[in-house]
Image (cartoon, rainbow, N blue to C red):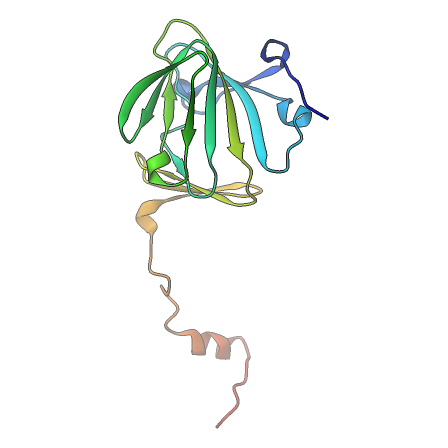
Length: 170
């Protein structure tokens, strides 16, 4: 059965992060209406002089923004461009899909955000050098802590011995 919704009849919830310039509203019940196994749906509004999420890209999810009302400025690796009512932007996985929105107008912009739903996604934030591991919760780390795969694994035999494991003697 199709799920039909009207952007003007959705209940919008104010999202107020710690930084005032990242304030927006999003639909609080749209995902209850559109019960998808593969996608997350949100209608969002960004007021004048406000940003969407920090500049980022996903390693495991694709995203589409459809501007429903108004105009918004999009930042990508290629630079800045305006997206207006009826236009949409697709963001592929990886660095080439990096994006951020800013409302450079005097009017509210409303857009539909469709993201592929994954049990695990990783976002990278190039401006702040953060990594966000997103599953049931978000865990955010600074990229500066990146280490080699075998970091601190060189004494594995003694770790096993300290845990009480007895190796076969040959």
